[in-house]
Length: 218
Image (cartoon, rainbow, N blue to C red; front, side, top):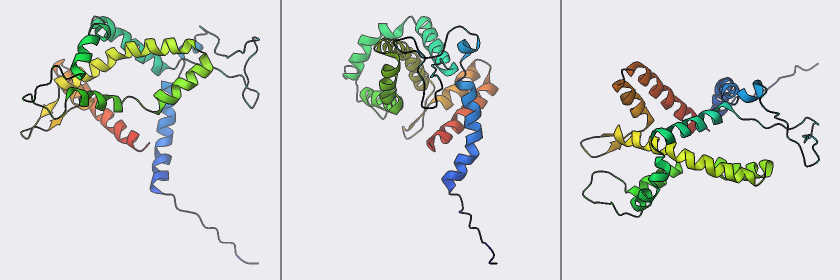
C-alpha cells in the first residue's frame, strides 16, 4: 500500500494577516454593532411586509433591522457638536460656499493646498462605497422615508466633520520646509495634553494610528 503524501499549501501573507486580525475584528464587531435598544426591548426588530407578515431570508429566518451602537454614538456626537457650536452646520453654509469658490484665497498664505483642494481631500476620505451602495440598500429596506433620515444625518454630520477639520488645522505642524503634518494623531495627543490628559491622548493617538494601518489592509 502506497504511502499517501498530503501537500499543505502555504498561506500567503495576506491570508496570514487576515487570520491574525479576524478574532480582533470579530470582537470589535460584537461591541460596535450591538443594538442596545433591542436588548432593552424598546422596539421590535423584525421586518414585516405590507401584509404584516415577517420577511424571511432564504433559510426561513425572519429578517431583522437594528440600530448599532456605533450609529447611536455618531448621532449623539453630531447632535452634541451641532448644539455646542451653535448649529455651525447651518450658520456657516454660506461661508463654506464662498471658501470653496476661492473668495478668501490668498497666494501669500502658508499652506500646500487651496480651500477647494482641502475640501476634496476631506471628501475623498469620507465618501466611499458605503455612501453609494448604502443609500440603495437603505431605500430598498426602509422605503423612500429613509432618504429623509439620511439627509438629516448628513446635515448633523456636517458638525462632526467641521469639528474634525478644525482640530486638524489647529493642531497641525508645519516644518521648516513648509510641509504640513496633522490629523487625529496630533490633536488627540496635543489637544488632550492641554486638558491635562496627555497620557490618554498618547494612547488614543497610538491606537488610532494602529487602526489606520490595519484598515489599509482592507
